[in-house]
Length: 247
Ligand code: MF3
Ligand code: CO
Image (cartoon, rainbow, N blue to C red; front, side, top):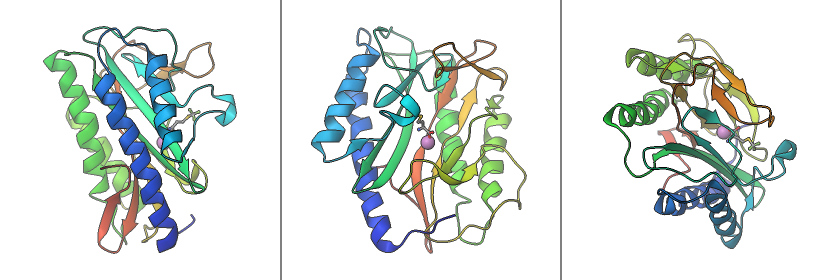
């Protein structure tokens, strides 16, 4: 686990701001009729205009700057000609490098207006992130975060995806440690100030099992149920957690 200096954290605040602003821009245009490719193009333009470099583009051959995952797609949906429809939900995941450091965040948005039942799924995904970072404090253990996320999700009747996890982040998009969204409290590495993490609960309305489509990227729920994703890059400080991918 690589602990960042104040200078590095300051750069990561800038990377995080670009990511947060890109998400805001995308949110403004998400409505019935837009294609996921148009959303991707907007994000790439915005990141480059801000002096950043899209972090996903070319990563293990990934062909776009965002992941756009609709309805039963959990993560890593590839932008393309798909037209969004009223009542869909769309997970948008975006990352950017700025001066050599990475920010990574995701939100799940409704397209037009989705049902109350679906809104609750989106709300619980977001809440579970906040339930988790409450434990992102010096002296705690990593899986205290994981456990708090799991408890919030499962007590609301949803399941936590097991096979995909959050991660350390910095000069690389993915660094140690892995950050599962489930686990036992008082276990895992000790948390210290200067640790930067991408915490990203992925939660399903049905069972937690997922599979990957033949495009090699798109992860979907095995039972076809809806899925929501919420992610921020954070830093642990002596005064508690700070979200870097927020305005
Ligand atoms: N935000 C993602 C993550 O945390 C996904 C990026 S996968 C990519 O791992 F290939 F699109 F880059
Ligand atoms: Co991530």
